[in-house]
Length: 192
Image (cartoon, rainbow, N blue to C red; front, top):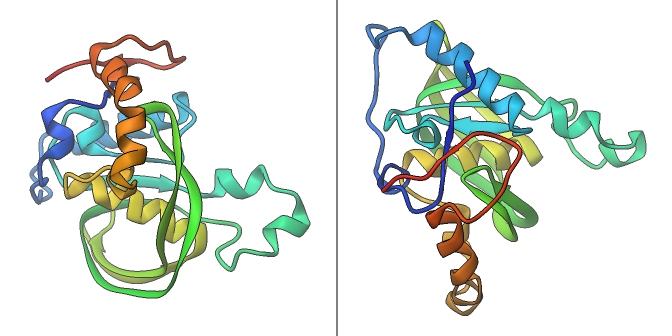
């Protein structure tokens, strides 16, 4: 089932999410719904807070980014061809490498994009979809998508990386998103 994406301004997007375990109700159904919702909205990642669930769960499919690239452009990224993965109760162990800029957007903040600096490498501990412990290092665009989704679990949004003046210039657009004065081609929920 395609779920509505929670729009900017919802309290759930500013909460620190809580850990879950394998007793979480209807977990497999939730995962299926999240994948369907992410693909329906043309996303490459989706965090549970974006569907109004304040739990430490996100999904990533960075393969889609690489599928849209020319072969020679793909060669610039060490993480090609990308990953498709479930992350439960993720915790950052190490942020490493130099910070680099990339133009990011967010399904909860449609039609706003901004260059954001993030580390090129992240090591995470997490549980996979079978609740098995994992520890892995990710690089490049995949690391960036993971860090973007991880921020959602910490109540942080990509616009928080903007300089105050730039954010102030966008405030009327952000207010319009919060009030539902925006048209997108996917389901959204406008809540407090």
